Length: 220
Image 1 (spheres, helix red, strand yellow):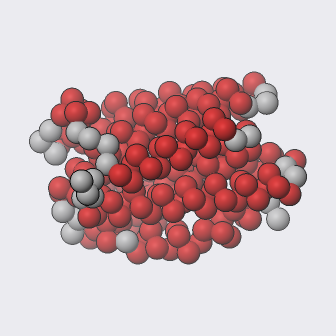
Image 2: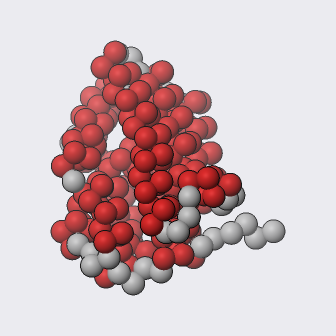
């Protein structure tokens, strides 16, 4: 069994829950309230800045030049997405990147980014890759499902097309190939740690969308 197949077998129920979540279904039937989508865009901008740092750490730990180059390029791409896509979306939402940056990081975002950064800095290269993988892979799978359904809302359709297209899938495929390579060389203990991190950050993916749906704030 490829490492990717083993990892995915652990989180199929999480993926199903994400696809059934009202935030995600609301993108395709256009019932998602604009304030919930704005909340998501703001927190996604905060998240991507942390995610870029996690990818840069993967690049630093990579054992060969090809993997270092790949993760370094993806770290730069995360910053570019945060800058360009979110600027466009915030403008359509009647706001700006500057206003979004001034808004607080909320609980699910803080927890997710903190877990990622702790894992990529303290764990092995294989653990780091497993931790960052759900953000790549789940977005690709959700994007593909949403692209097939489409959305009557132009704003939501634009977001769907970014993650549901062939270009993004090619990026994800490269990381999956790297996951299979390092997983094949991992010992039993390291592979179990990869599975744990992959499952935890997959859960954080669900929590991230759920937080946007509820427009979660700090309790105190």
